[in-house]
Image 1 (cartoon, one colour):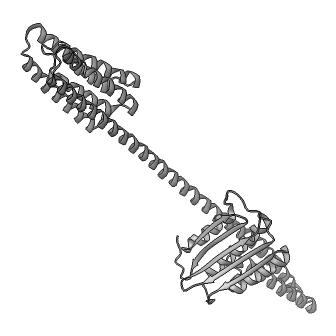
Image 2 (spheres, one colour):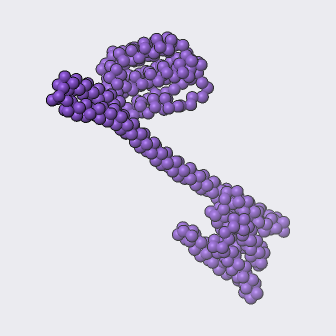
Image 3 (cartoon, helix red, strand yellow):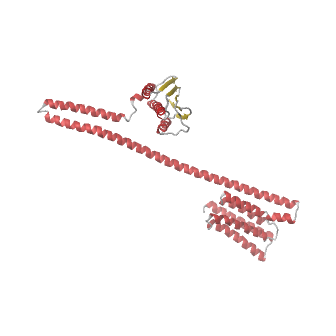
Length: 390
């Protein structure tokens, strides 16, 4: 039980004791009636204490409020007055407590029964003595009780909705954390896999060539005094082996950098389109607007990969026969729009290609969008001044 709940029950107990003392003084109760009223009040207090500490079952917990209503009604029934406003206030306490501790539906049911029960004596009052004063009283207290019921119901609704939002927010934070952990693991595995591949390539190429080179040099050393021509031949072969090994090492290292043919800006894209058109038998048209400016290697590679992926998808997935590529150079951006006449799709499901395109563009603060209506459309922009997003 947290501190707020403890404070509530302490406040409830103090308030009820004060109201009960006021009711007894108003009643001027003594003798057996005083004992009976005190006994009912003590039972009412005990039910409230047991409900907070012992009644863990939700059904029993809710049913305990019916006992509260019955005990308060019994207090009123044993009053010497038809209406004792001190006892009547106990109903308001039940309305408030049930709204704070029960679910919205259960709280509403308890609230309606509480309001109806609290009005029984007013109905009897009207029955026995019908006048404007009594009608005004029943109207006033009915409005008061209904207002409190509606107010507590909306408070309960707000509370439950806030709890749902908090729960969803926590789930979202948890899912985001797991997703980030998963992405970090994937990134780590990708790096390890790439390192292993490079290590294998270096081992296979450099190891093989170095072994052959050492053997040839040792043989040349043995023959240099006996057969100078053979030794020279072995030295020549050793030089060839060394050059071959160096070439292969450079090829492996070159895989870590973008290919040089990509880093020629628009010229690289023109070569790509021409080569792809010939090989795939597709009509690819390139239109350029604005003044072409020299862009950074990051922009060159990103724009090249966007066009490359668009052409590949147009043929592979869209079965397109025509692709139109529009590039527009502005003061701050390179705008692109790539449209094909393929079959299109109703719902775009992003595979590795489109996701990779999004990631490349997002990493340099650009934007890319995908549309599918009578073909497939890719459009967006890349900033000319690149600030990478880590």
